[in-house]
Amino acid sequence: MAKDEKDAAAEEAPKKSKKMLIIIVAVALVVLVGGGAGAFFMLRGDSAEAEEEAPVKGIVTALENTLTLNLADGHYLKLGFAIQQTEEGGEEEVDINEALNIAIETYTGLEVAELSTEKGRDAVKAEFLEKLKKAYTTEEGVEQVMDVYFTSFVTQ
Image (cartoon, rainbow, N blue to C red; front, side, top):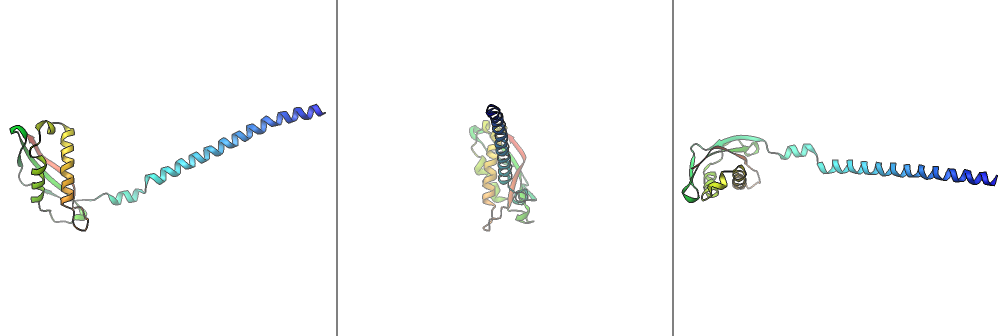
């Protein structure tokens, strides 16, 4: 009988270790899935907060006439644009004169090759928009400009 007891003990040992392995794997999966889900919800933020932070479109202030600017090597840029204001900035049109000055400073002297590709135009437009946002932010921190739209963009 001693031999039978040893055989029975030997058969039970692998069953227990397989059972223990399955339990450890199950617990590890639960921890990993729970941690991943927690990280996902913590890192994505609150969608309501994200919607509140995005500015709401207000009125559009358009340049009445196009602007002709000198580019490098005797070339010209005929530029027309409109400013998309934020709702928070109010219902009054912003004074466009400062935007004209910023446009002249930003575009004068650029190479035609720089403005002939979409990537080049987008890069200069982003710079122009950042300057506009900075210029049209009130002392209280209210941004009055959220975007700029080109109504005319012709190089010669």
